[in-house]
Image (cartoon, rainbow, N blue to C red; front, side, top):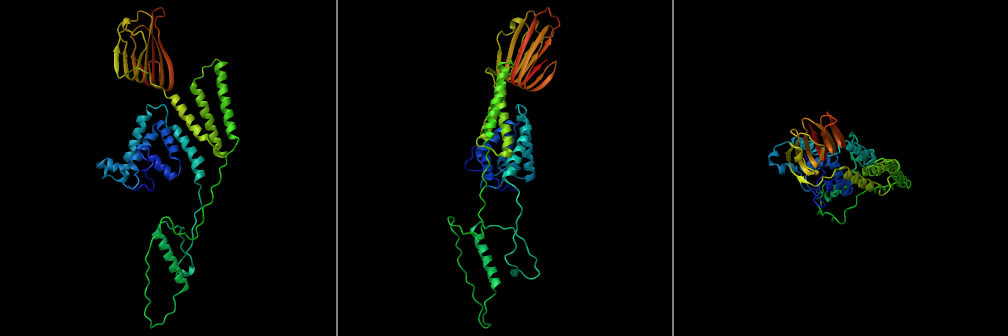
Length: 414
């Protein structure tokens, strides 16, 4: 099984030549495909799975064998269908493994695929009716032979051009008929001529060649950019008024999302009216900025797994405990609450598990940037999660307040 004409490019490749090969086949800028691959990698890890699959199944220039057969020699006995099925299963595993800790699912890929197919691919590659031509002359075919339709093909190599010229010469001889010769004359000797290929710099002219029609100039509406800028200004002004005059807390992510949503609306209108210059690159930049703002940044601190246990109030830390990454387990089951205290645990990425004291008044305030929360009150998962849990059995007794935060991962309270 050969994946022609798709090949990974040897020249102009940055990593494995996948994007450069696709750009060469689709006649687009490789930078656009590289940006799209990064976005797909953030959307559930699909870009990583696709790129790894292309590295294992798409040969490089000058090769016809699956790279999987060379990287894993024990797979040479496998059929192409088994190799492709194995790579597809590997891609599913990669998507599940990466998508489990990414805050973005694969659902937006479906919408982007519809926009690309109906707004770009269908417009660039419209369906054309098939054409066919008959044989040059009906007299050149024997009587009773039906006409055969063949698709017009232009000779590509020197040998094909020479063969086409020879067939044309034979057809002309058949139409004109043989020259009269005396019956007692010997048969004329065939004259052979040396075949010399045409130099690549001066290819032979193809008969009946029609130059392609000039590409129609794109319609770039002048009103779309002012409309997009006015909508962006109006949206940002509305958020500013709500924040200043209304006293509503508007996070910075809301401003970036407003700009990205307006650019997306502009691209939707451009699919029907024509896309102005600069709208698509600015939309990609706005999407990258929004994604960067949504991804929680790990906090500075210790790295690694740690399990601690506190049995007295004097052992509780007086400052905030910061962990950059790892799994942290805090055991407070043997703690006796004899005074009102508060302590903090903050983690950049990983699992933060806390076992509460068996008795006493406890308040837990937790927050998760992206991940899961499981506690006695509820179980939640998603992005920017916040909540609190209270176990107050005696209002007159001291209260222990536990503040937990993790950027990416899980908070477990039991």
